[in-house]
Image (cartoon, rainbow, N blue to C red; front, side, top):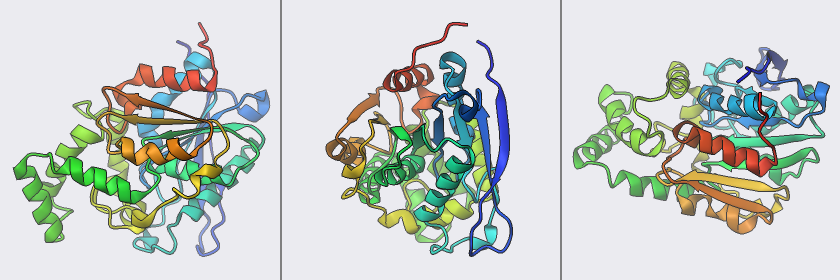
Length: 313
């Protein structure tokens, strides 16, 4: 397998309420799409605030199908500008902030007329919000492991949490009751849930571990918008709900989730019910990160949906 060329850079992102210069870091695997007129996949990571590293397996598609893959770190995390002074500022960290950043990235990369989006978890929520606006250049949307509303996400997460060993539940309940979510005890109990419903590959794959390492270094965005954990959502995303708007998505859409996913079937079902051109695939052996848990099958499903054929080197 031939490794694709890699290009990376930073794009200025002007945020009126921030006095310092901000930048969005990006990396392209494969030829620059504007130079070759090849439609890229623009990858939107989750969190919010969990950098792109855990999605790097998608570079397989650049190597095997010659699809340009564009990663970027959303402002506030990874290699983009960090804004720790904005921690707990819910009025600042909004979906609109990231939608404007996405539009800015698309314009600067000169792909306005022809691109696909793959969004994972929060990234799928963001991608759906983008698609609801019906941008002319968006050709296909992939919503991976994402809720249409956080109410159903929390219901599913609480149900899965109730199936954890009783001693683990006791630690989670006590630490949350006492406001001790930063403790090592809470972290260990939380990982029991994560090993069942976030990534079932043990030990944790290096790409995911790197994303979590960076999150631990700066959890500004995650703590403000989400909260202490995947199942303890206390941030501004708690009221996220686009169920009444997803019917506005007109491009062909692929829904993905896993059998053991936090995004259980009822969590993603509103997309399937309301989007006109939609397909749904559930990975039998995966939870929330099938690109890591069933890597080959994930690439096959995505490439088939996008109509790409494998390139033999």
